[in-house]
Length: 69
Image 1 (spheres, helix red, strand yellow):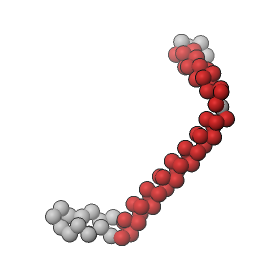
Image 2 (cartoon, one colour):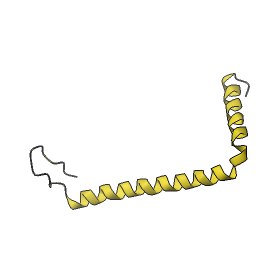
Image 3 (cartoon, rainbow, N blue to C red):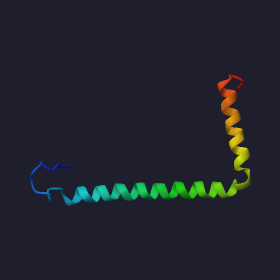
Image 4 (tube, rainbow, N blue to C red):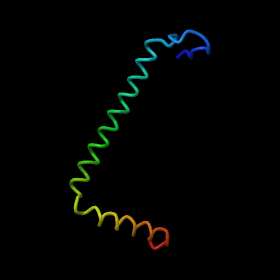
């Protein structure tokens, strides 16, 4: 990838480089959409159990910090 020299033509960035940037942004967007969907499904499945799950995680962390597990 060729970086433009300051003060030179603003259109010095090649089309292939712009397409690579757009492709990377689209891949990141799709990954974020998939992660959001998976977390949404898990949130719906564990809906009423979320407070209990949070308490379990907190208690495991405290027990680990106190060297009980």
